[in-house]
Image (cartoon, rainbow, N blue to C red; front, top):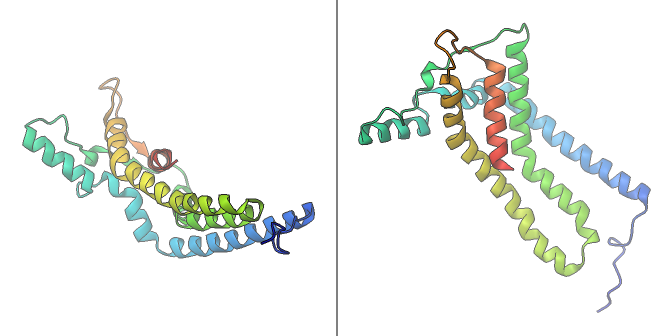
Length: 194
């Protein structure tokens, strides 16, 4: 067997690399755009997911309510119903709709993005590293989704409960801007995913 690279694996020029990156970006942009359109058209479902952590029926909230009852303490009881959201911008709700669709499209497209990046880098890797790297390519989206779910189901409700009910004075009430709420849910979830 020869160690010479095949024609497909031969070294590419800088221009050929740029052309390949352009093709990858176009494919990823097409997938992302299609996902965005689908999610944008499913407004009710997407926004139900975004606002679920402030509902009593959210699994984490139910678990902590049960745990508080079993242990006989209110300290563990998450009460997200106290979190009052408002919108103070003319286009605020429309932008919320767009932002939730963009974030959802990114989450769903993430495994495809990782795959495309790996296909771009793969020809530069020696054969033994290619075999080892496929494991990481397949595991990365799994770990990303697991972290995202942990952040969404565990950390987000706790953060919302703490930040939404925290008061430095009884003279100040918390009425949370819907954009701030969504940023908190996204930030906490993505922080756990990364």
